[in-house]
Length: 553
Image (cartoon, rainbow, N blue to C red):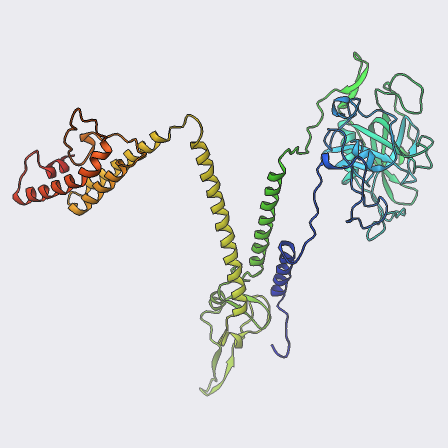
């Protein structure tokens, strides 16, 4: 070990995780950033002290003005526009990309395709990022994303270095093509090659539908994904003077389809199609259900939920640390950890059982009977070929490692107990609130509990007929204290339900039962217990004997 010192990689990883968890949970003053709800955000995009770049490169989104979810397909109607009650109209322009997000037209602040691979694409932005794009206004051929090295700070790399594939955002466009979903299209002033691009800012140009998609070799020598978009909106295009929207038209002839590969075309009827009776474009099939969760909770509940999440993260980090201190043989948290010279950790019982029955040396004898020098047995480490026979002769428990494991286990147990106690308190408070509801008779509930208690004590007494008089007196005194409580409304038990007969109450006195029992019950109990003892000694079996009554109940 001294000649070839080795680093205990398991211990190093555990120490790093411990430092990381300490920096997450505590570890000095932390900068707390306040979360802004949508109603508290300004109307325009804004920058904060967290921004790493100047200008609007790291700007935060302003208030969302529409009530549609992020994965909404199709146009944004007036009922989802509480600000203006008109929806988002074709031809509306905005100065910044964030404005498109605030009005629900295109949510990604940087990416040109909005959608999910398994769900479909809802919107795109034509900004002239790929030189293979072809824009003809009523229809255009759009190039997919990818194929460029954007690692490091290469956010604007225009050189393609590998082929595009139908994955992620490209697959989302392909799903919209197969299902016939409507796609919102936004054109940007950055597209200098298109005659239909706006002069300034970003313009919403309406609904398009993807009719075909394929792959071909692009101008830079690598394969690109291609999509044929055809306009199908009820409002006229911004560059026309028509008063009506689009009508179904024949698909244009695309010469490059002859050289295309992986051609995909819709086989079933589209979800968004033209209705001849109503003369408009509409959903012919139900739109896909939204996957976005709408959460409307109070700020206090949100903060409590965050505390629970932080606590769960802390516990999970401790569990990961304990897993880092696992034995390589039993794969459980180490018990009496041993660290071998080759820097592997094992439980002491596991390591001893692995070499049980083996000796450290073996005796050798020649054929002529002469003894040779004993040969040392090689005992290889269970995790590597290193010989640890000398270490196994006197293995020493790693006390420092054991203290760390015990500390982590105690903290985990403490957190679990705290969680259980908090759950118990919540259940008790919920039960108290339920009992405090109007119509809940708590007196009757206590009476039922008292009766159950009396019945259980009666069963215990009948099962053991040789009860001592002292135990009986104790039970009677307890019962008299309960019956004599100032707030108790428990009625007097019937003689058949009691283990000791009681004299009938005097008529016309009007004295409370509780007061009578408070002073008399103890005297009666003592007297009758003595009578029972005398009757037992004399062999009295009269039906009026208290012992006889007690045994016959």
